[in-house]
Image (tube, rainbow, N blue to C red; front, side, top):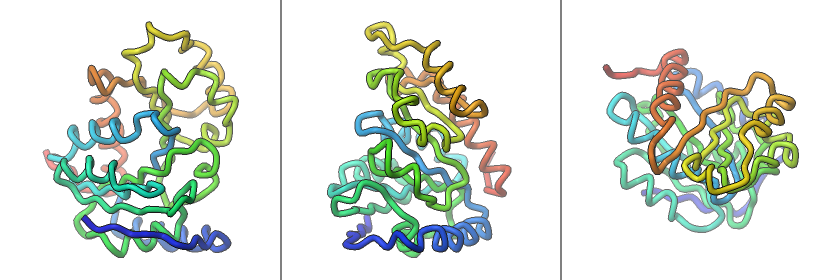
Length: 223
């Protein structure tokens, strides 16, 4: 597994670099998501379930963002797909320069679906274009249903919301009705999936959604 240690971020040219990265990804027909969420929301667990559902049908690659460790990348690598760890050295988000360097270290010719798992944070990552086709935010039941109104930018800019750990719903005071009301007031077009990585409820529908998006982008999906 390759690993990149980023010592300095160049933020001023983020959009310019993101545009160049996007052109490359478009040329190669690679569908890309930027997976966001708080620490502990279950991003990596959801990602593992997506990989399990789709890896036999298409070529996947994961760029794993973290402050210092390779723990999440080690988990992903165990599933037998391409993975590249990007350590930010304390930075609270990934940026386009980091993605540009990552793309030069993976086999993009053999990739149909690129998943960027961003650093756990509901604030900074929302503002940075990583050349993704869509931002996908993971929110867990254990975080509470008040997060969309507390961190509106993240939810306004996401095309998909994954509500994770729904198997714990009955043990909390989380209100799904309030969540839907709040999230739709911020982003009426957002697509919402309710999932559990424990019971795998909702995972198949989520995987099928991404598969259709990959086909639309021109990715090869094996029967």
